[in-house]
Amino acid sequence: MSGLAQAAAVAVGRLDGAVALLTVERRLVGLALLRIACAGVVLCYLLGQWPNRHLLWGPSGAHPIWLFERELLSTQAPSLLATSSPLAFELVYHLSIVVGLLCLIGWRARLVGITFFAVAWSLLHRNVLVMTGGDSLLLLILPWLLLTNTSAYLSVDSGWRGISSDWRPAPRPWRALLHNLGLFGMVLQLSTMYLFAGLHKLFGAPWLDGSAAGAVLRTERFSHPLLGPLISQHAIVSQIVTAWTVVFELTSPLLLWLPATRWLVATQSVLFHGGIAIMMGLATFAVEATMLQLVVFPDASYRRLIARLRIVGTGQKSAAPSPSRPARSSSINGGLARAVYNSDQSARNTEREHGQQEARHRGHERGSG
Amino acid sequence: MAAVVLPALVLAHFGLIAATIANPALIPEIARPAVERYLVPIFVQDWRLFAPRPDAHDYAVYARGEYVEEGVRRWTPWLDLLDPLIVTVQANRLSPDGVRLEVTHKAALLTFWSGGPFMQVPSGRAVLAERWAQVERQPMSAVVLSRLAAVALADAHPRHTFDTLQVLLTSRTVGDGGPEDVSALLLPAIPFPEVVR
Picture 1 (cartoon, one colour):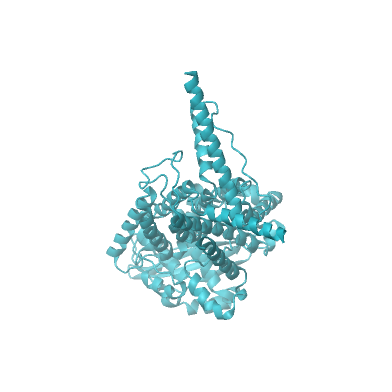
Picture 2 (picture 1 turned 90 degrees about the vertical axis):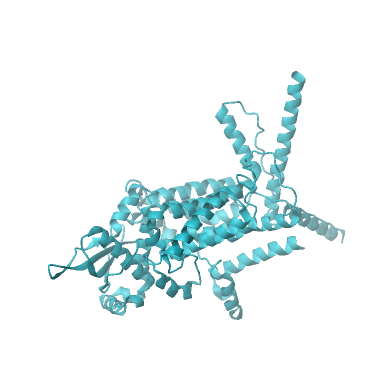
């Protein structure tokens, strides 16, 4: 009986820990960077395709308004750019650029965020043939991004607060709860993408016999004249790349939640999607698929990175503490929130150590002075 | 309480998405319309990225236009729409032409797919071509291809005024040395569309 009570007390303690985790906004740096990346991608479309805007999205372009209205019954995806008036189209298009810029600089981020979602949705659904898998991912994370505080850093709203700032978010239980739910939703969305992309591949013979990567890279559309043959003409290389793709996609949904392995997922993501950008020519897809990794790391990781870069930049010897290993969960019992909790606890410990070390350092300087 | 209920709702949301991707039959039939109304269009997804079998075909899109010169009706030579875009994007992975390549390639691929089993044999492709004689009855991807073709032809032959447009699609399997399978779909000639660039 006492054992049962003890187990219940432990469970309640863990639940309290998980609830406490939700009352402070997490991953604010990563979310600020993600806001910038999302706005950057949409602006790349809007500004990069500005000379082709009438052809790609205009009322009498390649996907004319009558065709959009015919397809709307099945797509059920309306668009602000779906207008038969060329003047209204120009107005909405150029207002979309303004909204993209406001999102980029983080001005009135919550209000602009809602408008930005409408703009991105309208742009990509006005002509669905423009949309890649990365664009789908972008549109799937934007509703979750609306719940989060994306302007705590690197924004007009924050007074251009830098990543290495001493500022810490004040506890705001309800807003923090929504923020952390948005964050939770985004990482779950990323996991869902990798998991099903990997599982679907398990049902295809070319992915199991190792020929898939070579087959894709032999097509003209996705080939690279110099690098493509290195994979497509060497069976062993094709098998390795094919196997890596499947293993990466199937393991990432778990590994990106664990503090000890998320760097492994992020590194593989950069290599994998960077390879797709160069070899297959899908640069926008690669950026969109990689940028969600930004929210996987706690703020302390970014501060350590900035500190290291500064040290490297100034050529000084390391004054920063060595990065502490994140506390390992003895198991994933207690759920994914526990893993994040441990990681953030570890990050806070590191920051506390950093602060104490700085204080000692300052005391030492005063003493020696 | 909210700190427990809300994350549980988020998990339920993704459980629903997982069920619809993995096996929609997991959702009780009575609940399916409600689930569809909830997920479509914002949260619907499937992630068949090059799976289960990557599409190992090279597509080509050709267009020609008919015009009157000195009282005689003439056709232009076939103009290749995809190849110049592929060459440009292979030379510069960040080229703005990447978007037009994406649209043209996807439109060609979807036009072949939208033919379904009719695409397998020449007589089926002839039936399709007849069915698609009117632009309004063509699949979305074929309409887009025709309009992209109109722009490309107007660019290539700026001195001609075209009356009619015709598009030819080909698909060739890309194997590792095995026999190639080439199929072609000649879309019916249609009035030259006015496209604003």
